[in-house]
Amino acid sequence: MPFSITLVARGKDVMVEASARKDGNLEKSLISEKKAAETKGTTTSLPSALQFKDSHGTMYQSSMEVTLRYEKHGSHQTFEETLYIVEDCQPDVIMRRDISKQSLQSKDGSYPTYYGKQSKGKKSRQQQRARTSHRR
View 1: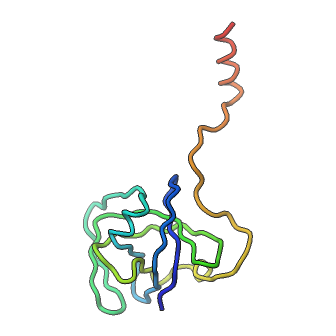
View 2: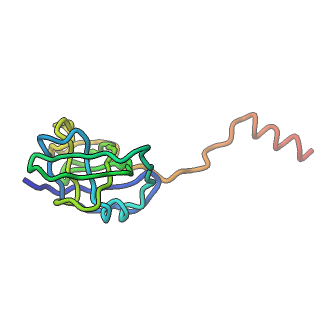
View 3: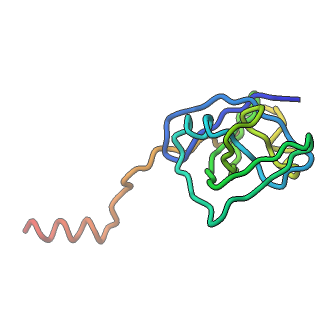
């Protein structure tokens, strides 16, 4: 039975709504090429194409992957997952068979949510001293 999730890529402000289901046969999670592109996540090419067969007998092929965070609607907790990009799948995301049951629950709680923007961070004391000594 399909359910709704929100996807977000590291360092991106784009939150993408997607329809998903868990598959009892897949060893890896899959995402449609269209939804992967919407997230603007960084993709990685695989050394060789991988083939997957879901519990309905549908075959998929992937030569790229993307790592995203997802939240099942109503949960407020996010989980990181590597998704293998396929040309098309119904629904938009098909979760692997051994995905954490916790990640598919819809319990409220106080959890960290999405990746934050990358910041330059605070300079170390050594860097601050070096900058001050150059000014003298």
